[in-house]
Length: 522
Image (cartoon, rainbow, N blue to C red):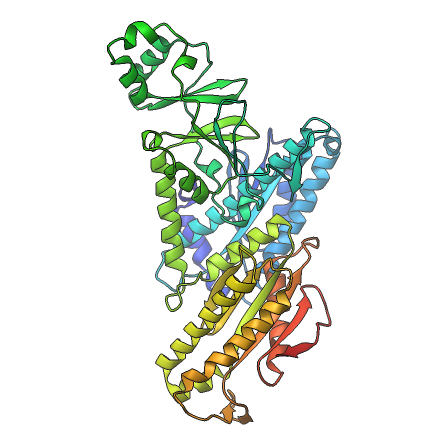
C-alpha cells in the first residue's frame, strides 16, 4: 500500500527540501461511509496547514505529508500541532452527527497515525525511507483500531461477566486455555498488550479462508478443494466462531484409506475436522504465535493458524507467512541495531517508547551518558573507548536483568548515550545499582594509570578521578498526554542538571515537572 502511494513527482516534491528537518507523515482512517461534513473538516484542516506538501486518498484512508521550513519549529512539534488540530475537528464532527457520542460507534469512528522520515545516513533510498514512515503511521492506526475494537467488546459484554481489564483490553487469566470442552487450543492476549511488544500483531497477517458449517458434507469439501487447487485448508465454524480445521492433505489421506470413501464421503465435515487446531486472538504478537505454532505436534506443524477477534473468525495465517514476517522483523532489528553493542537503535527505541505510551501504563525512562568520555578517547584511544562503551552496555543489561522488571527495554542511542525503559517499581534503585556497578568496574579500563584530573570539552582541567556516569530518570504516570518529543525534552533538562554534579549521579523528575528533582550520587 505504501509503495502504491509513491511516484516520481511525489518523491521529488517531498525530498526537495527535506534536509531542513524531514517529512511528517499523517494517516487518517475513517470508518464506514465518509460523510460530507467529515470531508469538509478534512479540507478545512488542509487549508490551515501551511507546510502541507502532498496528499493522497485511498478509499477511507487519507495520507498527508508535511514539510518543515528552514527556520521553523522542529518536525515533531509541527506534526503534533497538526494532529491535535485534526483530531479536534474530527471529534467535533462525530460528536454532532446522529448523537454518535451516545453509542459505541464513535470509539472507532476515526484513527490517526503519524511518523517522521529523514534523509538516510546509511544509503537507504528516498523511496524506501518514505515508505517505512508510511508503514509506521499505518501500523499506529491499526494498533489504535485493534485496541478500540477490543475495548468495545469489553463494554458490549453481558452484565456480570467476569472479565479483567487492563488498558482497555479484555484479558484472560492465561495465554492458552481450553474452551467448549473440545480441547481446542486458544491463545489469548497476555497480561501486557501486544502493542507494548511489537507493532506486528498476528491479525495483520490474517487472510480469508474457506469456511463451512459443521453440517456440510465431506464430498462438498472435497469438490471445493478439487476446483481450488491453491486452497490448502478450510475452517469449520458455527455462528462465526471456529470449532475445527480440515487441511486438504489430511482429508485426502483419510479418504485414500481402504474404507475411507464409503465411511466418510457422505458424512458431515464435523466427523473429520481437527478439534485441536491452534486459534489465536488477533492482537497476540507474531513472535508468540510462531512459538505456539512450532510447539505443536509434528503432524500439525504446517497447519494454518486460525485468527479471531473477540472469539469471532477473521481469517487464518499460513506458517510460511508467519515465518516470513518473523524473518522480516529480525532483519529490521538487526539492520537498526547498534553495531558496537548489538542493542536496538534509534528507530526501535522510538517504536518501543511509543508502544509503551500507547498502552497507557506508567513506566520509567533512564537516559545514561558518560562524562568526560572525549577526554578518555583522547588519552586511551578509540579502541579502549569502545571497550568502555561495551562495559556500560553490559552494566545496564546486568542491572536491568537482576533488579528491573521482566520486560525492561535497553537501547543504544549512539556513542556513549543509552536509554532504559523500565516497569520497575523502584526505578531509583536501578539508577543506584547502575552507578555502583559502573564505578566499581570502570577503573579496569585505565590500564593501571592513576587518574586524578580530566579535561572538559573546552580544554579546562577538572579535578575528577576519571569518567563518571550521569543518569536522567524520568517517570510518566500513564495518565497525562505525552509524546516521545516531550520525553526527550524533559530528559535533556535532567541530563544537563546531572552533568553539573561532581562524580557519578542521577537526577529524577516527572516528564512534566517544571522544576525537576534534586540530583543524587551514590
